[in-house]
Amino acid sequence: MTGIEYVLTKVKEPNLFVITKQKKDAPETITPVATYYVLYGSIYQAPSLRNVLEAKMGRVMHHISNAFKTTASNLEKIGYVGSESGPTANFEI
Image (cartoon, rainbow, N blue to C red):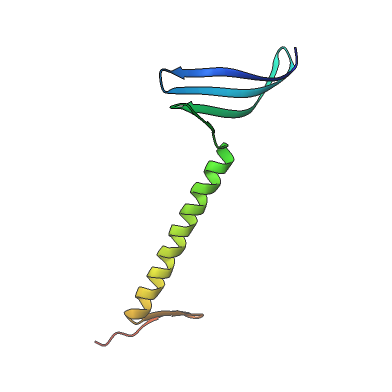
């Protein structure tokens, strides 16, 4: 039999059930399409791995960008400013 089927893949009674939507092209050929979970009676679609990684990487890039901005601002405050020929420091001895 071929087509779309839903399989109850994990049960943690009474609050959590995991359901996998999968496509059967042949009796031996099964491709997962989506994963859903039922938590306290509400059904949610689980995010794909790609969506999770995109969100995490976006958050990481945001924090790295803020760190560079803060570092550049602090270097300007203490008189250490970079130029094309290299960094220069304004220190008096």
